[in-house]
Amino acid sequence: RGLSPFPGAWTTLGGKRLKLLRSRVATGQGAPGTVLTGFTIACATGAVEITQAQIEGRGAQDAAAFLRGTPLSPGTILGE
Image 1 (cartoon, helix red, strand yellow):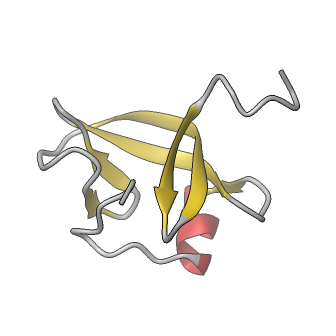
Image 2: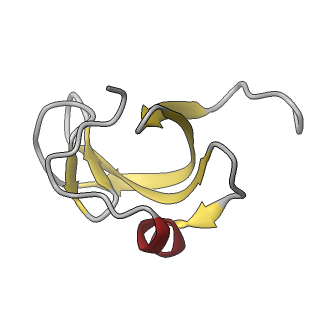
């Protein structure tokens, strides 16, 4: 499992694979995959806050460190 890319949640951002390693339930509404604020992403029902992620070519980072290196603007759509 340590070397397998699956199971796990992932999407794409800027053409790179983004692994979503840890998350928690959050409040919010919007089109699924849309960044609401910070690292809170809209889902079909409700939202999820990503607390740890890993973009292709980098190590795993907590949300604050990830957002310092890869700012996400509200309205950005993940997976496109």
